[in-house]
Image 1 (cartoon, rainbow, N blue to C red):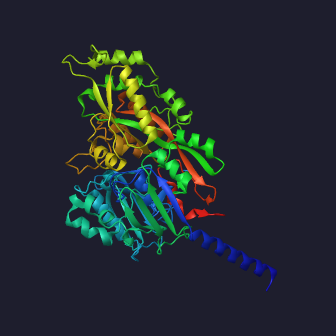
Image 2: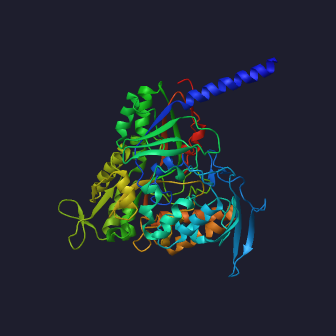
Image 3: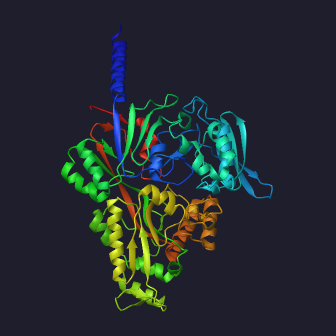
Length: 553
């Protein structure tokens, strides 16, 4: 045996040993929310994405460098490589045909191949008027799906969107979901296999599959034997839901969990304090990103239909002091829904500095005068009362809520806090617009993410559309609709940036939502865990969970 061959064999044996040791380990992750659903097309929530991105793969995704890459496909379609082609529509307009080739070995956990038939079913379900899919607009825009072969299909889209290369939806298993859907499309939200049989292996084609779910408590995942990619590094991953963020830290220190998910874990103020006390025992990563904490204002509330009241609400908040005092200056004030980290950000957008006197003047212009007790009331003697809601157990949000309540009280506004567990807050209250005043939560987006689902007038969830859409504030503005439409079809970057500036200015002028700050996520990891790379955008670290491994544990 040559020395070179011996070295190769030795390295292989050592590599196998390390892999075997790593696969023998369990990784226990603490997170603060339990998903309100497991179907990828309902109730958008970070907790659901965090779990499901271990079990499936989108066709395309933005990576840690904010570059669009293929995950389920094998090549990004472009006009240059011929996988995307302009075409004339029946009405004479211009559309585009985009062809995707799926990973040849992609297979659902029950052994059924992931095929073009899955794409066709997902499209048909998503565009059904009774399905209630969250982002139904993307399905409505696809005019047809041509099946080229089992692993190749073409989407015919009704416009040339600047994001045409990005696949617009998560795939569903047609062999399992079609019968359920066709039985009653309106009831599919609650009757899909994702809800009635969450541990069914046929729902997974990623590196892991869900093997156990205890509602509100834990989600257990194990390697998926049909996964075609890099072998995952753990025999078991357990997501332990600990809704009180202070309790997350205690569980980490006791060894009940190994790490805290940055996407849904402790707040940055907790992480900073934790690092001072225990930083020598853990790796702590602070990742700023496209995570926007805000307060959705329900436009159905007559008080909030007056723009002067909305402006008064933000003038009355000292958000800079909030950032300094609670977050050590690491979570900068948000002026609109577009982050300074995004290339389309306009630094000259009108901003709202803390100005309580201006706020009081606006309230009086709107007819809200101080009463005998200092609280404001209208000419009919009705008190200016607003309900403020957010997720219970999240220390940061609870503190912020109290600050907002206190600062608004200084203006004579009676803000009343009523918080709920995350699965109720997102699954019912927000999704069905049951909050009467303000709902505080965060949106996580991808780079240059057009806010159609959150700001376009036809994206307001209603009983009639089975609560589809994510425009929870109920904002309806014809100019905003027109700007969003124009942004999407503008391929020239400079012209598109000018449109983005108009969107940001319009947002700041109309103020349908109170922007608070840009969140930085805090990842608290054990020293032995390697391969975790925060993205700073919509896709969780778990989308690359197969790269995680234990070293020297």
